[in-house]
Image 1 (cartoon, one colour):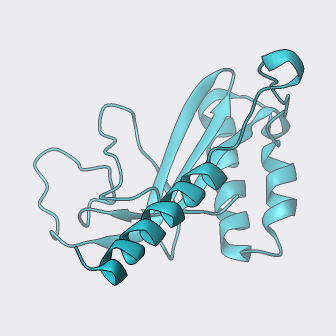
Image 2 (image 1 turned 180 degrees about the vertical axis):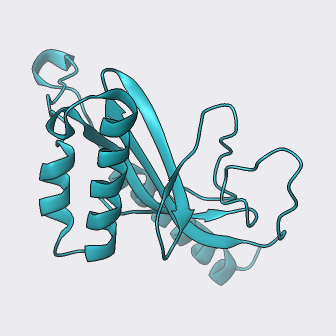
Length: 153
């Protein structure tokens, strides 16, 4: 092997080693014990306030979904927490919640996945990137088409 090629290979291996070392963050506390942060999830109203600056339409979607859960279950809006709110790509016009016997466009559709929790149960709300979200029962729910999506919160 030529000397310049060997040097380039060595430099590449060193660079990779340094990158891997930098990525490996140690999460252990003193004496090797693993520490755990305790963070309580925000209520639907707190999350809505936080998101007001980021996206006014998402704030409204969270409020509407929380009101829907209250209507379905009787759980107070303040007892509903936001488990997850993110942008996703759905695999079809069904927006991740196909109804039996229906046909949908087979194209990637940008949208939103919202998971709210009330009384220990997760409620799924799906939708496009514009417009209202809708409740999607677990037995019809599909995962987004690809990727984790962009975290909204």
